[in-house]
Length: 142
Image 1: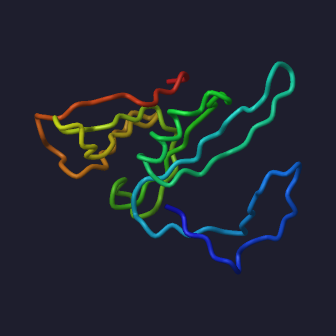
Image 2: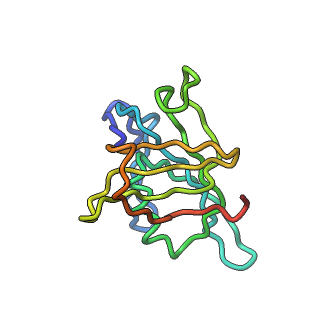
């Protein structure tokens, strides 16, 4: 989850009654993958894009369940060094996100496959034969 700080808030008057909050920066304390989702909110010829920063695989899973109003153009995954082995955070195009659950449907974590074919596993139990897999995102370009 992202943490916000009051001193980073940008004062902003609501537009059309919509309550928005703007931030100069947000904080991320957890060293787990997070995502940048590019959405196309347009209809017909009126297209505009926005990006959502999503703090975890579970949050992306939840977001994708209710995304009927927009077209997902691209998802980037940002992986910590402990996962990608490079010594630094790394951003890559996400090709596939798979939810890993045990037989009691408890979510153990997520497997992520990038456009380059690298697979990262961010879950509690790495090797278990009694898991269920559910693909929750698949890029149309890979």
